[in-house]
Image (cartoon, rainbow, N blue to C red; front, side, top):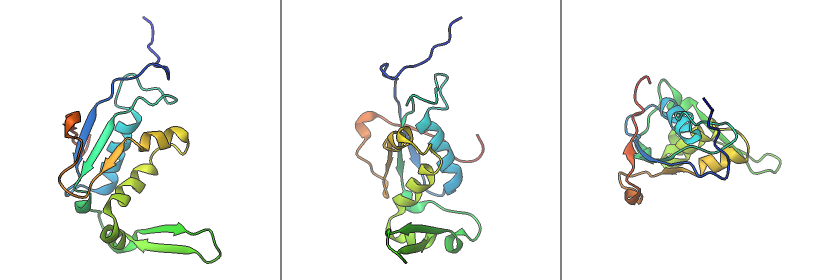
Length: 147
């Protein structure tokens, strides 16, 4: 029996999934999303070809973290100048832009190369309940609890 290896020229069949982030734990949800974006849930997974699916996340402003991470988890950014290090806690970042929290969590779980950035572009995050991707007929993706 031959093994099917997808090539870059062959367009894989891509599905759309929707994730409701209301009440979900950030890390557990991000691992499941990263797995779907990479395509590891498919039998045709190859590490050097983008075979992953699209993921739409709604209610990003209702995601939660466990323990004391509300005040102890810190997001850093640097301007590039001397003394240009800025820091925000999880609570402050959620107040400003809750979609960045999920995007950063998923981005850090993807490969740090061109393919990882391409996979991250298939992640769509919205703070509210509604999203403009109804035409793609996204299916719900279960991310709660254990797999």
